[in-house]
Length: 440
Image (cartoon, rainbow, N blue to C red):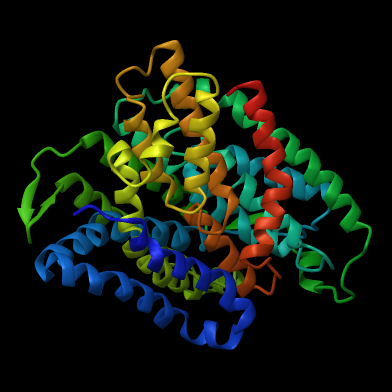
């Protein structure tokens, strides 16, 4: 079935609900956000079933849930569980120097253990370090920019779009070579801007209350076994991708990949091992709870379902409703800039991994990844997908997770539109800089 633009109404309605209802009706949203998300999912699924038949609609939804949503939730749950068992102990105060250093460490770690893994590892200590700051919202906005997105640009383990590229034949260290300069052009100014901004907010003081235990606690790490488990997670993801689809079999009209199935089971086992091997005292000290994970799981279930027609329209390319837009991507002046901005702009609202794959295939970037011009196109697509996932809370999976965890710990985070003001003001000038230097 070919979808018209009217089919994206449930997806847009869900986005507007996420953006508006926490401000307009916070009590209603926090009590019933799962039901509201389910309403928009049903608003797409029922008309889809009526027009295409229950069997076809069920197959399409089941395929998305089994092959995309379930692995997504399993990976996120594994990272959330393992990182929740690691606690950096000691007296850490969120001074501008300490905060900038922690953001730098998280940015570097994101390409090694993935943006989600690095975010889950660094976030809790950063919250603790800044819990007595009178103004600390900006710390976690920049954390999303750097650790949850931009830092993952240098390896396929860093961000899902790059992992898809690796599975399509892009060499493992290709992002390290071709995205290093774009990443530096984004990360270095952001760290400088953050340090200057943090110094200004730091002068406005701290809350009066002081935690006496933090003053005498020695620096150290509780739950060290989870550091090993955390490194195992990207290793499992990498090995699953390398194994391919050898021995795939049919089940419930779905083609099951044994390597993927085994990988998901291993991730579940890693999460279970973390729960078994980590003391409850450590998790209690981390204020560990399942609420942020449940919130993300409920909302993203609806997002994955309502996004089906949006991605189908995008995949239709020159044969779909967006044909005029796709036609702009042909050879000519500004081609790299168009790939960068179109991939990035759509990654801000759609899942950045499938968006990357669509433009990757449109550009035929895979078969020509070693040529000079195609390499430029692939770099523009990769940078757009990774960097501009930071534009909104839903642009990349860790963004919403960070927001939920911060709010649970009492940190005031911007609303959906408030975050857009932050990202638009700070990130767009840097995107323009990257465009002018590399993708003109």
